[in-house]
Length: 238
Image 1 (cartoon, rainbow, N blue to C red):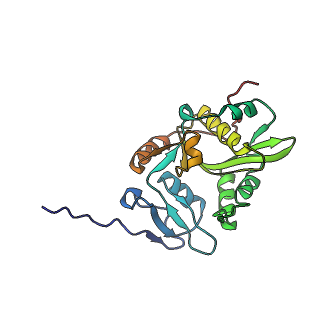
Image 2 (image 1 turned 90 degrees about the vertical axis):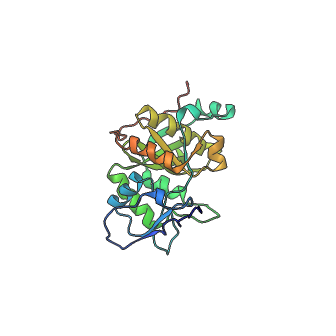
Image 3 (image 1 turned 30 degrees about the horizontal axis):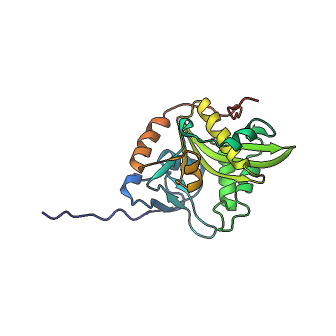
């Protein structure tokens, strides 16, 4: 008997103003384009992250919503910190939390030769998420100057790291290490870094099949975690 391979679903078109709902990402191919259109309202963005989906697109086109397979996560026990980075973690920088969210996000979009998805409407949308307590930033300072940072979205026990930047050698790595150690200390159960890039894999990120990621997400988002008062830490002694 021949096996019939049914095609995966084409991406769903979301009219502007449609309900803040997404289909099951497992119904789509491994590239993960789940939907096109809609808007960047707080309700839709929260629904996306709860479903294992995130927006990623360029200026001038409709929003595109993705859930790639595999996904990458980063757990504290797998975090790899090189010896040279450990020395930098022990002093010379200051860390803050949510001091300048919009500035961090703006810096993450600068100086990218390949272009950026951090376009004005994304900045505005994620600033609204930030005001509602769903988006956070961690800043790295040296001699009073902002030299690195990272931002992401929190839904329950999920923290989805979106992007990071550096203006001083290893400042983005310091931001990532501090984020991992800080949010897990605060009770976060799942840190999503989206794509398994070579850089993240060297830092200890691991690939998960999308189905496994979605199972972990279902557990994590039931947690009740408040990151408003988080104190960033590197975990290194002074």
